[in-house]
Length: 258
Ligand SMILES: Cc1cc2c(cc1C)N(C[C@H](O)[C@H](O)[C@H](O)COP(=O)(O)O)c1[nH]c(=O)[nH]c(=O)c1N2
Image 1: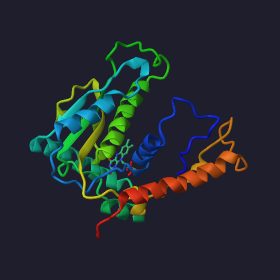
Image 2 (image 1 turned 135 degrees about the horizontal axis):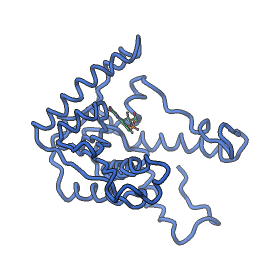
Image 3 (image 1 turned 30 degrees about the vertical axis):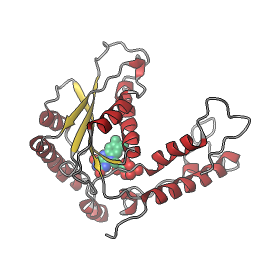
């Protein structure tokens, strides 16, 4: 991907070329990881950095609604996995035919394989019931905790750590497994650990579940549904989507034989 600054738009705030490349490298090579976890312990210094990255996420009204519940106990992980197993059995029946066969072959969690689980939550009442920026769109606090998830996910990738988000749970069962009070929303259960390798593409793409959508079909101009293939931006998007995949391919090498 060409990240050289365009001269008339660059200014003193633009990162150096190396820093920009590092950011894009992190974003394009991040993966959801389920199967490749190694038992290697994560140093507290590293854990601290990725949690701090999460804590520096944006949040509506600066309410910082998150907590970070770290799960190392095998017993608790097993409880969480039980909640996953029962929810996943239900989930499987919701797909039909060939889709169900494919679903059955997917590994959708690494709860006990990963050395650590991190549950990121949302306390919807953290700063009271009226929150700057959430007065009309009530879900903004939930989205804020999701921003923390993404920060952690990217920081973890830069540290060489894989992260896998597991959401196949009944919320109350995950709360029960982790002792989370009813008014605290579990946003993400993340399996975190060093990995043997990162895939160059989403596993769901590699295993035939769904392809990545062409970005140019997702961009509208001024009004919903108003696509315009003649806009000069479109050619940039097509090139950059390919370049992004190239970066992910290179980051994933060398892949072990499976
Ligand atoms: C909110 C949310 C919830 C889940 C996920 C993601 C997000 C954002 N993903 C991971 C998801 O399958 C993955 O992000 C996409 O397939 C794209 O792959 P990469 O993340 O780019 O590798 C996910 N993966 C999985 O195996 N089990 C799961 O329960 C979930 N749940």
